[in-house]
Image 1 (cartoon, rainbow, N blue to C red):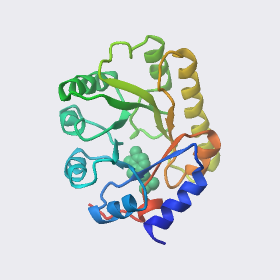
Image 2 (cartoon, rainbow, N blue to C red):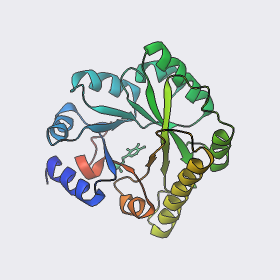
Image 3 (cartoon, rainbow, N blue to C red):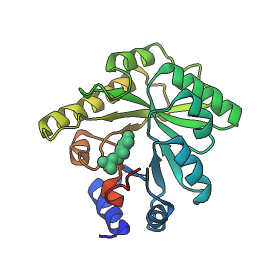
Length: 222
Ligand SMILES: *Cc1c(COP(=O)(O)O)cnc(C)c1O
């Protein structure tokens, strides 16, 4: 199946209310261009250096999502190229992104990453810390950053019940934030679901999925 076929299949499965970020990490320009030519416009990268090389080499109407753990010293490399940072995992990072966006003279969209999975390796706010951030209106001091929603990952397990539970938990946290911060305009994204688990994410009410291998096939190794 071609990349274009994969995109058509995915879009049909998602329906009109769910957006698709094609995760192009480690993919060379050829396959990304193929996806672009098939109409795909949202792409995800998780390394600053890769984004820095790819973004200027590809059409300017691509919406780039940075989806990896972002180190402070890489913020200035990412902000000029990304429209979204989907993986804000500390308040400190959020405010540094805001400073960098101001310096770059642009407004950046972000998603706050919440951690519900068991694995120690997964980064993100605990649900409690994230709810506290919104209850305390930590977003009021942002000048060049729009918090557009949250991002989460389910436990990496073949146990579909567990995955389903994690997805529902992420969705519930999103609903709770909308409840405690009703004045937060444009807060309308819950990004969850990858190639392995997007059916569970759909059932739980995702609005944005991040698909890599389901679109491009297996990733080239780095
Ligand atoms: C790599 C990656 C994806 C895509 O993973 P696939 O299993 O290839 O769909 C999604 N989200 C994040 C944060 C990633 O790093």
